[in-house]
Length: 297
Image 1 (spheres, one colour):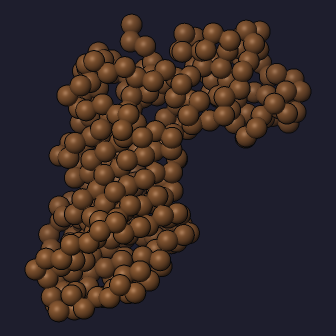
Image 2: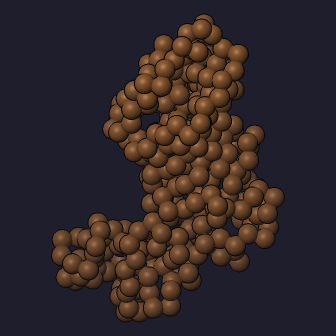
Image 3: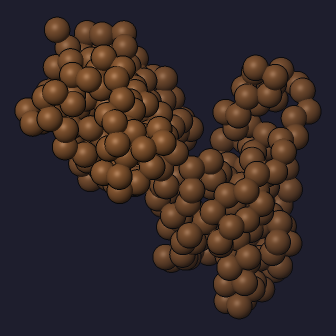
């Protein structure tokens, strides 16, 4: 029997997130596998995978803040806002080379903080039940609604000049739902030269870091985090007794115990180190929001 757990995978370029899920299914011999947040085929980096009952934890991971390392090419736009699309416009080389440090700093600053962002039309967002990128591939004109996102860090690390373009290597800390391709597009638009993404690597999802991830060729020997260990990284742990664990699993409330919560929800862990589930307040009581199968350490 496959034990439930959370697996951190360093996705290589060229594979879809679904490809990685398929590889994990084969390696672990189970169909019950899911991921917390898609990475485009071009992108590399951290993919958080749930195996067996731990897929229930993905709901609490997918909304975590993320960190990306990216390369933004200023000087041209593409149909997909990244290097996989066809070039739409190219700026005059002299205009690109004339960009100043203050202009670049101001452009980046304007895209830092809480901003309104229009996702790329080839994103995975669903429009009337179909992915936006599927509609674009079918020849439809897709314009997605703007959404509020938070970019808490947008730092230029280095820059490189080329024949008519300027590449910026950047690090971005952002809220879930932020599109780095859109940051590249919008920075280029604000500077009047156009921009798109040429490289993207996700290095962090919440408290999970890519340095702890396994490569795609090492899945067979990979040891996932236990549900309890993974939940403790995402949520505040809450110790519960054997009797309390039994009651929570049976759908009973823990009367008058909501004051034990340090946050709106917590990871209930019993004395054996087993994750009982996720609990929250119901008035003055504690109640399960989600229960794990017994034995899900």
